Image 1 (cartoon, rainbow, N blue to C red):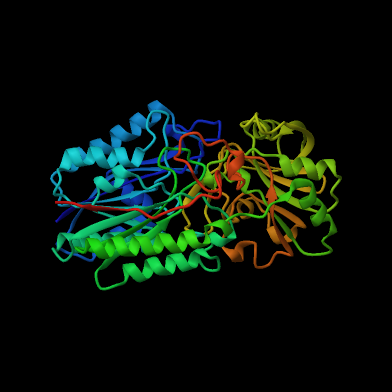
Image 2: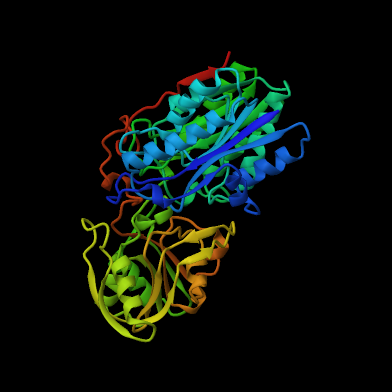
Amino acid sequence: MRILISECKQEISSFNPVTSHYEDFNISFGKELFEFHKGVRNEVGSAVDVFAGRPDVELVPGYGARAITSGGTLGAADWDRIAREFLDAVKNARPVDGIYFSLHGAMCAENELDPEGYLLQETRKLVGEKIPIVVSLDLHGILTERMLQHSDAIVVYHTYPHVDFYTTGQRAARLLLKILDGKARPVMAMVVVPALVRGDEMITETGLIRHVIKAAQEAENSKLGLSAGMFWGNPFTDVPELRSNSIVVMDGDVEEAAEQAVRIAGIFWEHHEKMRVPLTSVPDAVRIARETPSGTVILVDAADATSSGASGDSNAILTELVKSGYQGRALLPIVDAPAVAAAFEAGVGETIEVTLGGSLDRKRFTPLPVQARVKMLSDGTFRSEHQRDLWHGGDTAVLEIGNIVIVVTSRPVSLFDRSLFYAHGQDPKDFNVVVVKSPHCEPHMFKTWAARYIDVDAPGSTSADVKSLGHTRGARPMFPLDENFEWVPEVKTYQRA
């Protein structure tokens, strides 16, 4: 059996004014795709491992477009190129007996609001209606009508923070093999839930969302269960079908799939009003840090989370630390290519006068003039703490402004672990304040040892204050953009002939 594997993954914020481009992706053609994922514990890597255990399977590496990190809306020409290369790989792979696509679900281009749905629709035109297509998606993906119409089964992450990349790929690969072996006839049911949610209650190990995920796992592991999960979407990807969705895939039983999808969605709706983030103002957060007698205070600036699509150049907390004369040791990340260029020109040990922040999102952030000492310079390439894959921050400088240390990258890089700090000689535990630009990291990275852990109400294109962003494309009513409305679950089912 010839099985094609391809990948296309990016998460964007429509509210980030900086357009993403082709150069913001790691691109792989053919065998390069498997080489890129070799030894990396993610979906493609695990799917390859599963299929490799079957001597009757011939793997066909297709194409990979994996965003270096999340960002703003993808440019039209850049999307056209990625889509063309992706679909050319499908054409060249034919004939195939089955397809596994590792997608994200929260892409958006200037000329295509549902990129993943488009790729699936066009793939169907190329391979026909009878070739099974199994798709894995991030639970922050936006599940669309086109995705469901043109795939045989959807497999979605179960954990947040995401620690099940590898097992998600395994689930998808094993499901595809079941279909190819004639041991499963998947039917899908989906229920739309009009809610955009954020906050600690979404942490699957401890938050209220665990009840929803438990129900999904029960459905997936039932006698006829093939896959089940809950999408709560990416509130920052402003597209027409932005919402939350339950999804259930059963073996041949449409009624059971529908019943379980309604059950999962109902549990989600039961808790949705509690799925918000209590936020502390920037001045109050810095005041609390100043008043904390010992230990490290973590200031969570999720409004500038590059892994969620933000620009990374927020200086809101840095400005308050400087303005208030904060005396403790502080560690922050920021994106500012001009400042890095000035540091490289001056060299290590020199003092430079530059501005920090506001180099990309000029609407939200005003550049802060500073005098800084250049502590370190690097090429900004390092391995992530969790998956050990390569991350690229571009030329990077470590700058010191008195007691404040800033790791300044030339381009956005994911910040949902400590690897940027570690790669540049900075241990967060050595500081009184650390700014973390991610809504959630695995607890051991910061939360379990921090003296205080504060969600800060800073400006940014990925703010947890969803009402502040300015959605224009999605259906209404939608929580929390609208409140005090009734919801009655409606289920839609999908079954390929």
